[in-house]
Length: 127
Image (cartoon, rainbow, N blue to C red; front, side, top):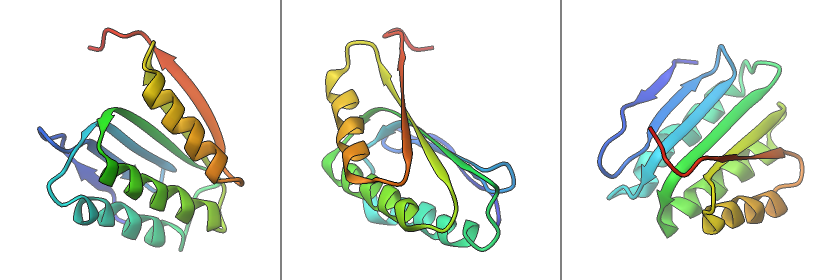
C-alpha cells in the first residue's frame, strides 16, 4: 500500500499510515469540516493494507479533542478492523484527568471484541 501522511491542521489531526511498518497514528484535534471525506482516506487505506498486511497493525489514537462526527468515523475504523482478517491493537492515548476521552476509549473497547485496547495516560502538559 502507499503510505498515507496527512499534516495536522487547525481542524484536522496528523495521520500517518505506514503499512510496511504496520502503524496507523492519528494525533491532534479532529473537527474537520467534512469528517466523512477526511476519514474515508483512512478507511480506504485499511482496505488496501488488508491485501498485504504486516503481522500486526498497531493503531495509536491520540486525540486531545474530537467531535461527534469524528467519533462516528473512529467507530467505523474500529469496526472495519474488528472484521479484518489481520490482527490489530489499539493504543488509546488520553491526558491525565481527561475522563471523557478515557471513557470514550473504554466505550469503543466494549464495542469491538477482537481488538485489544491498551489505555495510555499521559501527563496533562503536552509538548
